[in-house]
Image 1 (spheres, each protein chain N blue to C red):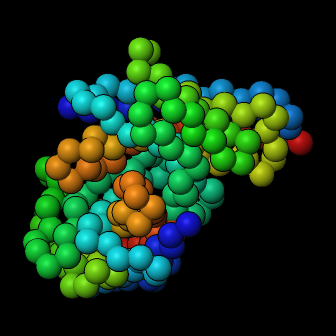
Image 2 (image 1 turned 90 degrees about the vertical axis):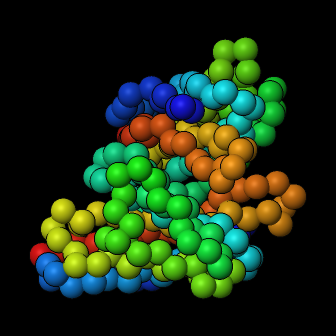
Length: 113
Length: 117
């Protein structure tokens, strides 16, 4: 079945560092891809999404490009802030049937001042 | 963006009692809502898909008699944990599917933390 694999965390960076969180997927069709962020004690918030190959999703300085050839959707940010500390989930939606979301295991990011 | 609320945000109950969690889409109609369970420091596990006006579809391994789902209107789905036990303690999150932007997006509620004593 469909699956999502994220780089293992936790990831700890200093403020203003460059961030990359790797995400690769396996899917039989052409899924939509998402990054969700979960702040401590809260539910998930949609950070960005891409619905077809070569699309770039972006929001709040974060970017991710849908790479069909490498089946990847890596999350990047040029200069992280302490407020970016959270758990980040990569996910896909298979667009068939109930169009359920399949999540990666999550990557905990901590930014130190 | 679209807003999904959950109530309550926190609940503590005694073993053997039932707990109802509500999930509402506040500014859009959702024919489909999803219920997830999240254990500490783990990813979300889909429990069931809730469809307005019909029976929920449960994922493999999820007891439908234990986790009762009702989707009585286009803005409300409820999850009832029946005869709760300590192993049911978890963070329960719902999401609602929105099509108003022209493409499908799931919006998540803030979650309900359940502690069964």
